[in-house]
Length: 396
Image (cartoon, rainbow, N blue to C red; front, side, top):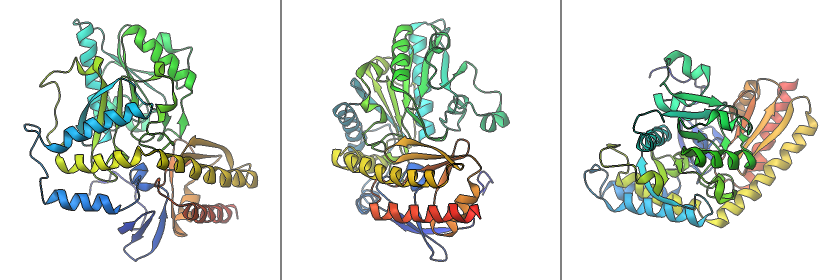
C-alpha cells in the first residue's frame, strides 16, 4: 500500500454495532465510527440485507440510463431536507461517490453560476475559511487552507481566497462581486470541532445573496442527524440557508456515496454534459443511502442523539474539573464533540486503545468523539470509564 496513512498496530477484521474486533479477536469500543461514517453502527443488519439483495439484482449500469434508486434517493433527500427545516428551497440532487467529489461538484457548479452571471469570467473567485477541511482532490484541497495538506502539491487551483471563521466584519471585503462561491462547514470537524455562530452564517448568507455568490454548506461530517437535527444548519432561520449542501460519510454507513443538494437557482445553470460520474448514483449505493436517509431523518433518533450528547457532556465536565490544566474546553453539538487539551493527546489515544477504546484527534490538541448515533448510554459510560483511566495513567 502507498504510505499515505500512519496506522497503529491493530488489524481489524470484523465489527458489529459500536464494537470492532482485531485479528487477535480483541474487542474495541469504537467512538470514531469510521470518522463519522457508521452512523447506524458497524454492519447494520438492514444495510447488510440491502447490499446483498441489490448485489444480486443490479449493481451498475452507468448514468447513461435510468435506474429506480438514484431518482428515489434524490427525491427523498429533497423532501427530508425541506421537512426537517433545512434548506427550504432544495430542489434537486447530484449523486456521486465521496465527500471530496461532492465538494468538487459544488465548486464546479459555483463556477458555472458565476460564468452565467458574468460571461467574461471575472466572477470566478472562491472563498473558504481557516480551519476548514473539504477534501484532498485539487479543487477541494484548494479550499482547505492547511499548509500541511497544500504545500506538497502547490500551486493550488487559482482564484481561492481564505477568511477567518466567525469573523463577521471581514465578510464584505472577503466576499465580493468577483466571488462565485463560498464554502463553509457549520461545524468544522477536522478543524477541531468548532461551530460557526448563527450570526456569522446569517451575515455570510446575506452578503452572498447581495453579490450573487453561491453559498455551500459542507455537512459531510456534521450532517445526517449527527447534531440532533437532520442537517446542522436546520436550526437556522431561512435567511441563513445555503444554495448547496454537500453530503457523504453517514449517507452510506460505510458504502461509498456522496450527494450535492442544490436549489433551483443553481440547478437552472447546470446543463447536460456540465458534469458527470461513472459510478455515482449506482443502484446499490443509492438504495443503501435511501435507507440511511429514511432512518437518519427520524425525529426520534435525533432526539436520542441529543440525550446521548448530554451523557457525554456530563462526564466531560467531571473530567474537566478533575484535570483543569489538561482539559480547557468542551465543544460541539449532538454526537460531534471535542475535548480541547493543553497538550498533545497522542499518549491518551494510545492508552485508550490499549484498553479497548478507539478515539481520534482533530485540529490542534483536540480529542474528537463521533460515535455511532445508535451508541447506547451503557456503551458511552463504559467508553468514558476507559477514557478516564487512559488520562489517569498518562498523568503518572
